[in-house]
Amino acid sequence: DSPVTVPQHFTVLEACRHAGVYVPTLCNHPRLPSRGTCRLCLVHTSNSSRLEPACVAPITPHMKIRTRSPEIDSTVRGNLKLMLSRHPNACMTCEANGRCEFQDLIRRYEVEDAWPKVPLTHEWDADCGTEHAIVRDLDKCIHCGRCQRACSVLQGMNVLGTAGRGEGAHVAAPFDAPLASSECIECGQCSLYCPVAAITPRPQYREVSDLLDTRRLDNHIMVAQTAPAVRVSIGEEMGIGPGKVTRGQLVSALRTIGFDYVFDTQFSADMTVMEEASEFVERIKSGGPFPMFTSCCPAWVSLVEKCYPEYIPNLSTCKSPQQMLGAIVKTRFAQQIGLSYPKRIVQVSIMPCTAKKSEARREGMASVGGTPDVDYVLTTRELGALLRMRKVEFASLPDSRYDNPFGNSSGAGAIFANTGGVMEAALRTASHMLQVELRPQSEMRYGAAPAQMGATDFHGVRGLQGVKEATYFLNGDPDRPLRVCVVHGTANVRHLLERMKEGKVGPFDFIEVMACPGGCIGGGGQPKSSDPLILSKRMNAVYSIDENKTIRNAHQNTAVDNLYSSYLGEPLGERSHRLLHTSYKDRSSACAPTAAQPSQDREGGEQGAGLENAS
Figure 1 (cartoon, rainbow, N blue to C red):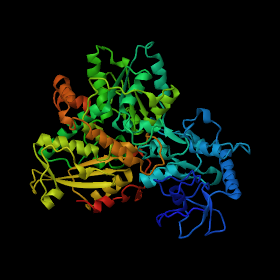
Figure 2: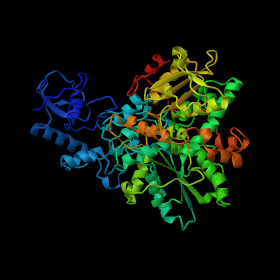
Figure 3: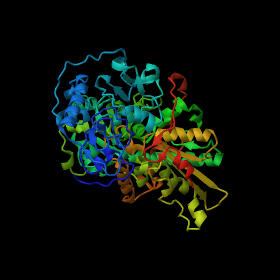
Figure 4: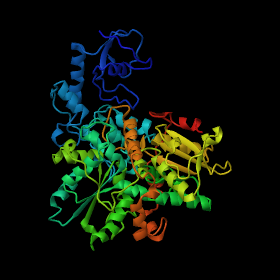
């Protein structure tokens, strides 16, 4: 027996993990509330004569816990056998093969089929997900409930729930409506928390692999672009560890598998800053409409179009960095390499986000002859699958540089990966464009020295608090406040919007919104992790990229300046507007409604808590 001291609020499972003692589980995840549905984390405690689920059993002083015994092992194996009887033996072709929590437990406990498979053909099997981003295979569902809790508690969407009873119970949208016609915003958090492959991003990496094999035969030019968040997470997917910056190895890996050019989406993030900051300055001068919302998160844009169409005029018209670079590659880059037929370019973006797949197919995202600017979108997990399929030894690859002319970027482009990053990058450049100092309210209150004009760091919008407010004063003038807000996680977003409608918060001038917790670093296509500190580790890695950059402001990126002077003209100019901006439409009438309920934010406490603590 080993005595262990843990916080009083811990469950038995958390105490065991704290002590380094293994307890099996499928329904539990550190960032989701526990439900005790899988009945695999069974333990003996001194408080009960029966086996208890460790994930929901509270710890008590002087409690004695036994995690292994013949009874416990037999019960766990029996429960796994029951699950296996309803699960297809399709591991070799499954998207989760080798990274499946259920498969790991079957191997660990040496479970084999004990009974004939239960037939699982039902009328709801026809609903296979959304058109571009999410695919479902309910035959593989183990009814752990993690996707439902991610959708309702973490994201506040309440799209996924349990329909039917007994043998007919299954995960479904309200009224068994097709997922594609629901209020699903394709954030992919359901797929991120699914322990098997019942819900996954719609895979495209096999198609991309085929194109790489036949690129010379088909005369294709293969172009890749990589998002800021991918360089701090692909290492996790390839076994290097969390919070590591593997930018150079990422570029090498893409060249190794056959891409002709590898560009940096951070370059187009700098373009986004130039356009968005210009748009914000223009609204300041013209008087609105306010607040201006950022528009680089496609799941957030989908939420506005489906659930809050009254805010469509407030959305920035800027395309996301993915789509800006897509348009520039298919136009300006095609000219530079002498292509009269840009359709020869096949552009593949590597993104942390599942909703980017649908964004690439939106109206207005085809700059040349109706061909999509971005042809394929692979998530970070898909890239990992592609590299493993092609036997790339990622950890042993040397560092490589991105290709010019779209390989140079500022630190401002890097921090787009984090919640608060888009706001901070825009504030850095907006203060330069306005030729003003932006002095935080805390400095006004305590008389500290003002920040310099175009200050690099805006710490008031950083961190993992669910909602962050900050007020800056133009040139320290108390009569010229600039009120900004940063919110991440859709549950927090919905709570903020409802309170704004009620007049309980605000008014704001500028609001950054990221649908996923933590922003892009916590996107639905990122590596799966049970590390409760994973977002902090990725966030710190992103800020280290910014801090180590020689150029930290988008307006100081000479490569972006050259693109404007040689091709685009000026921010918000005619060509810039045609290639780099978009429009939105009300899609609320086409959705099966759901009732969003207040929920618990895993990073910021009770959702909306940041509203009460605003400075």
